[in-house]
Image (cartoon, rainbow, N blue to C red; front, side, top):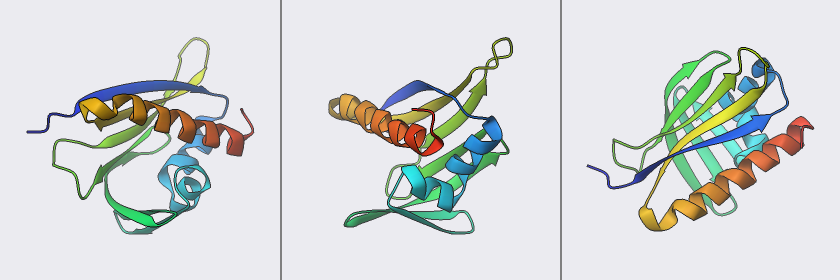
Length: 127
């Protein structure tokens, strides 16, 4: 069993859920903000940064709503999920990030996601 800490982060985003979904669910969308390059073969995604690459399996995908990945080198109880949430009343759109981090890496993981989402907002023109 993993002793990682589950994190849930929320980021307001000014974009339509349909547009956002393209950026969180496709290799071309993810390579615009999440990694330098992303390739996929079926449900296997390869995320490439500078001099490293990580493989993740797409666990689930619900159109215009969420994607859930599992890093192949991590234990089975951890994953990361990017979920699009729309407020029923205000129609405000947020991204809800669920991720796991070791206790000594929680702040680093939060900062990483803040930077990634900041890049996404720049790409979307909603910064």
